[in-house]
Image (cartoon, rainbow, N blue to C red; front, side, top):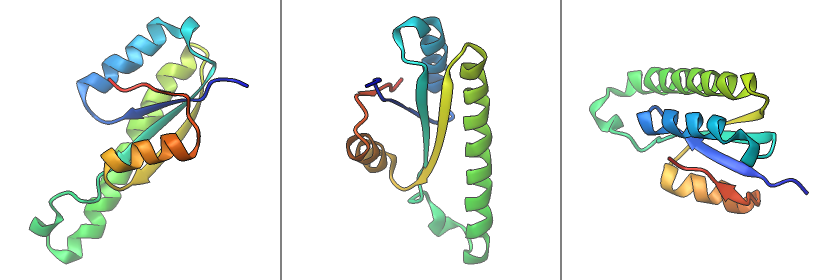
Length: 110
């Protein structure tokens, strides 16, 4: 059985460094990786009028998908097979929940 590795990502410079490190040490990783982006749906929506919340949420989702695809492309170029995951919720809850429920053996967090 191949090791299942989950890499939670966001828009931070630390995430980009993590991707660069995975590429630099690619021989230490299995070919299949899962990139996960969790959109925090508890952000300061109370400052946004109700009629704009859906638009803000859609824009956040679009930006997250683009980010995931860009990172996946970087990893794919060096031979990794990438599964992309996009979830909504509190990252500190969603990430460990997915890692545990789906039995990932390693979590790579920058």
